[in-house]
Image 1 (cartoon, rainbow, N blue to C red):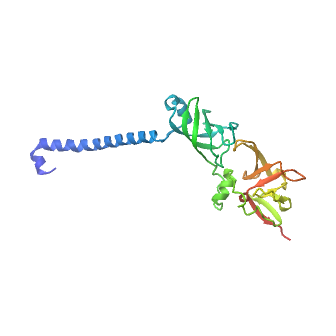
Image 2 (image 1 turned 90 degrees about the vertical axis):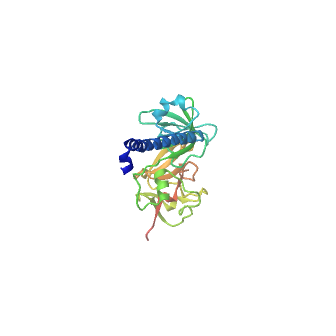
Image 3 (image 1 turned 45 degrees about the vertical axis):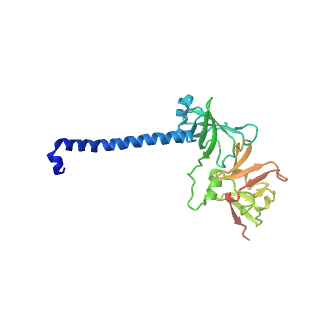
Length: 264
């Protein structure tokens, strides 16, 4: 305290009060600004981030507003409307609280029942969310240090490489195509053929015990996914439009395969 404040106690008290009030005033201004920023964000398309349970508890006040929720894609809930891009599914939490989602865009490759998804869009009546954005999380427990992002995306997130881009789609060497993740033998080169699809195609597998199948409705219609039975890596899909003698077409991503040349 300077000498002037010492000589005038009343003035010193006034100065101290001003010093105390000033931080409170600044904090109040910051809160007001933050309030208007949030309001502007919501009114211009920003979203409330909520749990599924909170959304249902507050649904009457949130109708017509943009919201964001995270939950699990319920098993058996995916269905199509007028076409394959008119998708309905249910997001649920661990307590089985559920919200139906309507999505009219191309589904992300990792989309699969049972996986965790983040959905953003306009909440409507009857517990339905008209989604404008959909993000699907894929499992990370299989992440390998020597696995490229593309390999991980295909094998662990059920992704699909673009057609005619994989290193094995036009590959003609003699040998065995193994699982790229665990090296389990999957296909022999003598059953590989050119299906014209742009992906490696085989009309039979080395051993059916090495490949699991699972119904896949991720595009709004039924397909049969093929998975490595040893490590659960996504391989591709199998179709019933292949050549004799099996009539099958195992359509496989090159990124899911590792070729082992036959030794003389």
